[in-house]
Length: 205
Image (cartoon, rainbow, N blue to C red):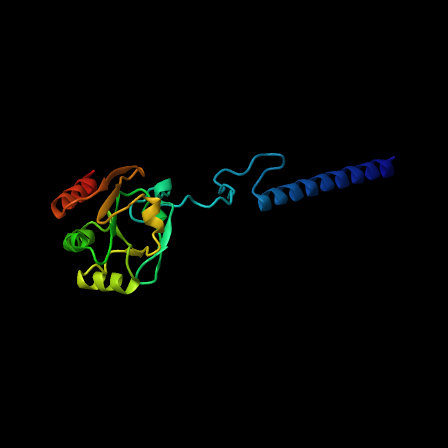
């Protein structure tokens, strides 16, 4: 009888020891993972990264960068400057633009060249003025640009008349003024005073 009681007591002690060991194992696992068994993430833990990159911003203003301006049909043309550089009018989208159609032998063009040379650098970033040289030879066109100090203003060589035909220009000197929405608001002659006033008005619009 005493032997049986002793045997039963020993079995109960072993069961208690086994249960205690299981509790220790579970608590240890919870400590390693930071979560209780079956429970939510431990309070104060950092949220999981979503992997999404931050939205780009303009370094100057901190605001999202402005969407590129839509290119109107009137500015969908390319060419080559008298200096040999490629020219794409699409880069002017979103700004008022003045196209000046001139010929190197034209006395009226020569009188207007001084005004263009004075006004164009002042409004280069707000109202670009672009010359379109035609009805002459490349050599004469380049000499005209040098003589009237027009080197800082883009001058497209159009000796074949492609752009003159595109804008229906049949004589020189003609100014084609395009507003920032791509609408032609003037096509015709302008003297120096009128050109200066028009460009200044566009810059302030």
